[in-house]
Amino acid sequence: MCAAPKPPLRVAIVAASLRILGGQAVQAQRMLDGWQDDPDVQAWLIPVNPVPPRPFDALLGIKFLRTLATEAWYWPLLFRELRRADVVHVFSASYTSFLLAPLPAVLVAKILGRPVVLNYHSGEAPDHLRRSALARRVLKSWVDLNAVPSPFLRDVLASFEIPAHVVANTIDLRQFRYRVRDPLRPRLLSTRNFEPLYNVACVLRAFARIQARWPDASLTLVGGGSQEHALRTQVEALALRHVTFTGRVAPADIARYYDDADIYLQTPSIDNMPLSVLEAFASGMAVVSTRVGGVPSILTDGVHGLLAPDDDDATVATQVMKLLDDPGYARRLAAAAHESCAPYAWPVVREGWLAVYRAALERRATVSCAAPAPPESA
Image 1 (cartoon, rainbow, N blue to C red):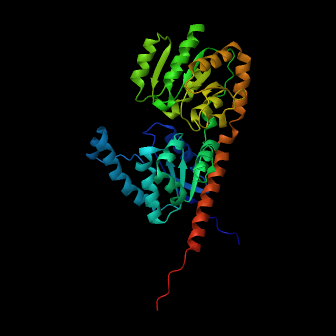
Image 2: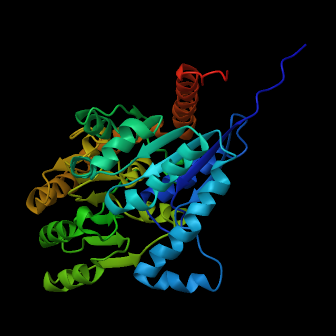
Image 3: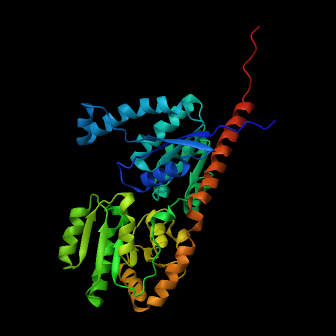
């Protein structure tokens, strides 16, 4: 007789929904898309940003009440949904976000006896873990396995004696059209949100230098955030031309912005494994970035693109102009970058997550078996 097929693993993915346009929300949605109709895993999203029912949804427009309203619906949602999970996959950032989103999920999973995989993404990990004894304890003792998307974060966690598995972020290569830039035009693109850690101000300072040599150069800024007004003021102060602010763009629409531009530029001061760089690789763009965090683990300087020191707009501009002065070199870098995308395709990443989920289950089973039996009653 043939053995009955094993039921799929039920995996609850705790992450932000696409109501919050950010790297973790996009990554979670790509995983959900990948697991759809998969025979080995049945996955569903538990949003860390649930929308309260009417009339309480009106509180979402008020800063502190928004947090209270969200948490009031988040905790019961966790208890209801995690009961039916075999594995709980929790996305995690740093600081206050860690306390509001992943920590409740870990606590509820422990109460319910469900194995937890903590998927830590933040480029701010060195400072967060140094400051937070609670975060260190959660990662060391409260979860079954830690998973990170880059060797950079694995090494950061190891410096605090916290083990972690590396499972790369994934991109949908079918979404992005690879195009050889011939001719190479001075059309630049940045898709980082307007927050201090992404240092988009450095992009503008570098672009001012570039435009001084290439007057027709253009820059498209895709994103939004707390620094938008300051960045618009900076554009005016630098007398920059051909700068376009698009606002936030839905993941389904982002590919056309990569397709329209020729050089991808980002200057974060803190970063982990930016999906934007991988998307630029998939689109055939030459990439210039600052050498921070996990960026060098996916972009080797002079092989897949060009790197510059943090907040060094002069070197950033020099690297961009090096590409514009030698289009053949830019195309060779872009071709090598495109070839490096294979490990980030879903079929490869899928195997990594399957191994992590099974390891978490095995670890939980081992711990349960090793626990001392309760004393027999007399």
